[in-house]
Every structure is written in structure tokens, then in C-alpha cells.
Image (cartoon, rainbow, N blue to C red; front, side):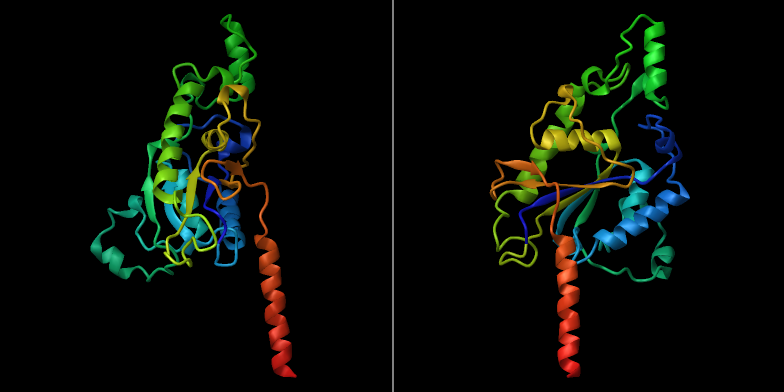
Length: 270
């Protein structure tokens, strides 16, 4: 298995993400297209020979917002544990539901650490409106969330504090000591070493920046589209050298496996 990784997944498309409205505490559902695309993402990227290997997930963090939780459901990871937001289901409902396709023992944790940036007075507004309103009140129209934060909301320093605490927790609990060719769920110790986070656009871009120690005030210049997936890991097999993984070889592995299977079938038939 490769070195420990963190997969960051932004929730699927919503009506507000389509038109650029800042969506923090407002809880709106995914669009039909958003759900469709997340299902496709799960089929393409989740599997034992894919980017996200369910069996190698040590832990799953998800935002308190329903749009993120629905996204996690649609990825179809095969979680052994019932999703926390389904814990109120009656025993009869649990008995009537079909047995799950269990593929991961990772626990699912809802955490405020990855809720979206608190936009405060800017909730539900697009950037051009925010800048125009600021100008009308004598404030700088050159507003940048990474530098200026949000009125009555969170600042870059606020975001940095909560994300740094989460990153330290992930590294100490799920990554420390889980490097090398014998690491991972199929290694000698049998300990999964990947972490999955399902949350929101600004907070995940900030998470990636803080993962590699970049100051948010400098604008991390990172993009994560609705339903997008990013991968964070380490260089030189060292927990002291966090990095952003720009590309992996899992697609090549899938094609190679398919070719080997075809070759095997040909040999059997001859």
C-alpha cells in the first residue's frame, strides 16, 4: 500500500453551488444531477483496485450538514457502522433493511471541525454582491475571504485553529507509525492508514493549504469543484513532509489488472 493518505471530497452540486452563493450553515439538498454525479464518482473511484480502497480506510470524518452526509451515503463505501444520522431508526426499520455490502470497518464521525466556513453576514450571497455592499458602506471592495474573512463570521485565523487541531489528530491517531511497504490493511499489522473527509469547498481548500503548512492569508489558490476529490499524503515516507498528491497510478493499475485477467483467460482457452 502507498503511504497514508487523506481523501478530501466536496459535497455534490446544490442549487447554491451552481450560482456561486456562499453556503455555510444553510442546509440545502443536493440537486438530482449532484446525486447522479456522486454515484458515478463512487463507482469510478471506490474499490479494492481504485483510488479509495474501503478496506484501507481507518476513519471517516463528515460535516454536520446534510448535503455532505448525503454525499457520503452515495459514495457507497460499504460502511459496517450505521451512519450516525440514521441512529434514530426503529428496530423494525433496521430489521427490514437489506444487509449492507460491508467493505470497510472505518467509523464515521460527524465533526464541527470540518463544517463550512462561517460566512456570517455574507451567507447566501455571491462575491460580487458582497464587494458591492462593502463599497456602499465605505469598506474596501477588494474583499478576499482568505485575507479578510467574513463580517460576523470566521476569520482565516479561526479556520486555521480548528483545522490545525484536526490535522494533528489525524496524524497522531491514524498516520504515525503506519508507513512503509508493510503498512496498510493488508500489511503485517493489518492497520488501515487512509482517512476520508466529506465536507465543503472553502473548508477543504483551507484544509489542503494547512496540510502543507501554507498560510490562508496568502490565498492558497486551490480549486475543488462540487463533487470533487483531492488526495493529500507525504513525501519520502515521512510524516514530517506532508504533501499534496497531484496524481496517482491507480488507473494504470486497473487497466493492468484487466489486461492480466484477459491474458489469463486466453491461456486457459488455448
